[in-house]
Amino acid sequence: MGAFPERPVWLDAETLLFLSTVGGSCGLFRAALDGTVTPQDHDPRAVIAAFTARGGGLALIRERADRFPEVELNGGQVTDLHDRLPFPARTPARVPFTNELGEGEGWVLLPDGTERAPALLSIHGGPHTAYGHAFMHEFQLFAARGYGVCYGNPRGSVGYGQAWSSAIYGRWGTVDMADLLAFFGACLAAQERLDGTRTAVMGGSYGGYMTNWITGHTDRFQAAITDRSICNLLSFGGTSDIGMRFWDDELGLNFHRSADALKLWDMSPLKYVEQVRTPTLIVHSVLDHRCPIEQAEQWYAALRLHGVPVRFVRFPGEDHELNRSGRPDRRLTRLREYLGWLERWLPGAEGRQPLAEEASA
Image 1 (cartoon, rainbow, N blue to C red):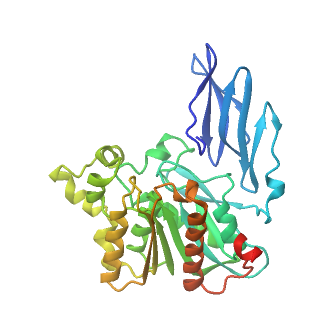
Image 2 (image 1 turned 135 degrees about the horizontal axis):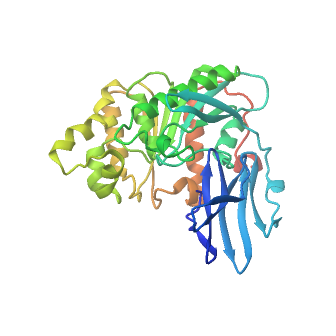
């Protein structure tokens, strides 16, 4: 489904209208009482992020990877936000990868020019969400600064069938890591401009968990950025606002059962922190109750104790949604921290463009 928590709407006594993710796209579909599902408005290279259907009318928000979100009313576009963008929107290239379930997919967003670009692997949260044809401001920013951004949908993502989404039940850090590294390798092979010697891994929430996990299991990346992450599955169970049910739902385990405790520890990045060598930026919000800040505090302390270069940035007054709906000045600060860390550990990115405030100074 889209980026907003939209619920299905009854168009009449027999027809339900709802959003559904299909691959990297999201469209509007109709479901009849007999179970028949038909597309109402589905562009396989676009995302409908939200809709409202009332009184025979339909309003929605549509976006594409290279097209800023616009409001449409009864089939007509009523905003022109894309034309007011102060920067050119780049178009990503699709990159497939394969595993035993079939073909997965992801995308690469490259900077302008012909110079080789450092390669960033970005991992989505959830884990049952998806990257796709939505407009990703952060990725556009990274590309404007000279980085190539690789983002894909490993097993666990939605939009590719239930078997794909359920494949990581009880197996976090296994087939999902294999898919992410396979996808990243496919990106490097498909795009000669990507520099495989200057790479970073990053992600938020579940993506932060995977960032921590990957750096504890490989030295493949020269830098890492872990945002609102998880490192200790045991303490998460007793501190997160979803902790009482989440590990049962995702792993079939829970922290309050002694038989499960060692299994949860085995799946915790903190167990493998002695193997981390990757310089890491930790970003976390103080009021995050989904992935509590104690997770970041543990990861920071452990990295410091083992001599890993690390920076910890704490945001007061923000929660799990900082990058999506946080106070604008804090969102700018977060992006500057990201860029500063990348520029420190992956030098030489070409095509640097300033943030809006810098451009107007």
